[in-house]
Amino acid sequence: MHTVPDANLLAIPTPYYLLDEAAIVDNMQIIARLCELSGAKALLALKCFATWGVFDVMQPYLHGTTSSSLNEVRLGYETFSNNHNEDPRYKNRDKKETHAYSVAYSADEIDEVLIYADKIIFNSISQLNAFKDKASAQNIPVGLRLNPKTSNSSFIIADPARPFSRLGEHDRDKIIAVLGDITGVMIHNNCENDSFEAFSDSLADIEARFGNVLAQLEWVSLGGGIHFIAPDYPLEKLATRLKSFSEKYGVQVYLEPGEASIHGSGSLVTTVLDTMHNEKNLAVVDASIEAHMLDLLIYQESASVASINDHAISVAPVGTEQKNNAPDNTIIYGRSCLAGDIFGEYALPNQLQVGDTIAFGNAAGYTMVKKNWFNGVGMPAIVIRRLDGSIDIQRKFDYQDYKDSLS
Image 1 (cartoon, rainbow, N blue to C red):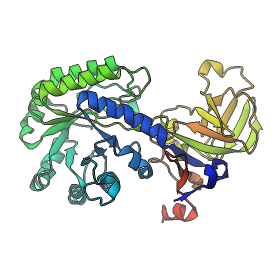
Image 2: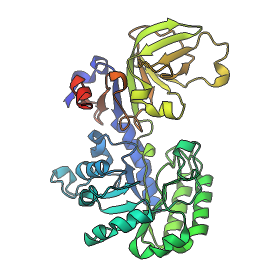
Image 3: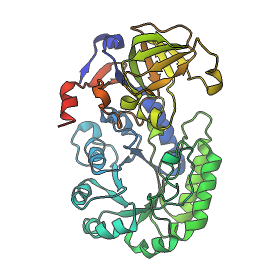
Image 4: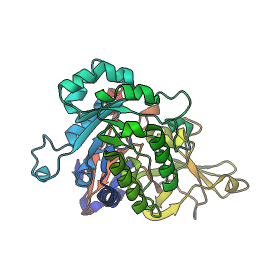
């Protein structure tokens, strides 16, 4: 890591991810407010965001991390937990929790998982039966994922309650039969849900179906996917609902904010390499959605433009009705060979030129954790704007990293 003199972003070769600590702290303060009002605890979901170079500004506001694999639980323990950290900055901070979850643990990794975990959550009763004794022998609280078979998700690919879902147990009688082996449950059935009413109704349905289970637990994690950082979200109503739920069943409530922790705090900065015209204006930048913003491809979405040539400009991709008979629109492509490597179509104030710098917005969540070396396209550096305005290049990637990722 090194600091760029005079905080000159234009001196950094593109592409790079740019994280803004001040924007992250803004989200952290909303999360902390929700926890203060509700009594809930918030755990960073590492599956969404695991760029540990900014964990120092997140740690004062969150209660720990939650994971989906051995590597993630180890990362959370090593970089977020202060249980073993002798750094004086962490000396007076509250103990952080490290929750471990996986869709399926293998027998050869469970012992290492338990080294790092403060709680371990099993996805199924069969996994619970296979490994509960190891956890109990180390006095590690055990949980089970519960699947209510209902959800708030607009995407079938991300819907944990999709038909034939493997994500958690749904049979109430079978869950009751193992209550003696668990102290809590995790329920993750929201995805980008910005409706308090939808969340509350869903929670009421869970209470109606599993109330006798909840009343026998010590803690309940309600997962992530709740977009409570939106400016118009009724945060106080959510807090009241969570507090009421907690008091009714006598449980500690956990939330697992991923996107909510870092929404709006990152961008992917690119440079225009080429321009063409094929009925519309075309531009090719030095990054790729398949390699660097994969969720755009998975969910068939487009990126917003946050700045051009370092001048802030908020341009949303045009809708379907705005694409027809619009020869002045610009389609921005990635540089991979995938025909559909498209950041989006835009009505820009000026035509793009080779050498222009374009920053795409909201590029923190589900980007760096999914980046890949498709086509051998250069990997974006990770750059951080610190709270004091200084710019750190946290990590660069080169050919050796590409080569080492293969064999």
